[in-house]
Amino acid sequence: MIKRITLLALVSSVVLFACKKSDSPSTPPATTDSVAILGKWSLVRNVSYDYAAGVFVDSSFEQVSALDYSYFDTNGKAYYYENDASNNNIEYRDTTTYHLLPNRLLVFIGTNENDTLKISTLTSHSLILTDSYLDTRNGSGNVTTYDTVQYAK
Image (cartoon, helix red, strand yellow):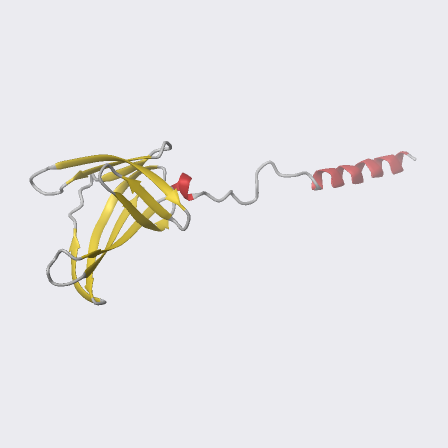
């Protein structure tokens, strides 16, 4: 009888501990864009490509300083700092409101205008924003400009 109770206790213990739930999930929860975008992002590259009637016309690269950054806070404010990366050392600062929309769109609401950018890449270490617009001011016809801004944490 004692053997049977000992065996029953042993089997019950094995079953009980084998079925214990883990305290941590097996896969981490997915990070949403609204969380992943938060914090300070260092500007890595800012390039524009111009096309007229679908044909490449020109490109321009903005000089980037190691001091350039954008910062997204939890209250929907975006802070931008740029040092012109030349010998002139001209600083530019701006603060604006931002909203994340479905389909990975990032809207900046400025004093004079709003700007909507597409989030092409957003990971814990990389943020790439793209934008395109039609420029009719250049006198040589309609030119579509595609901007790509790349940040890193």
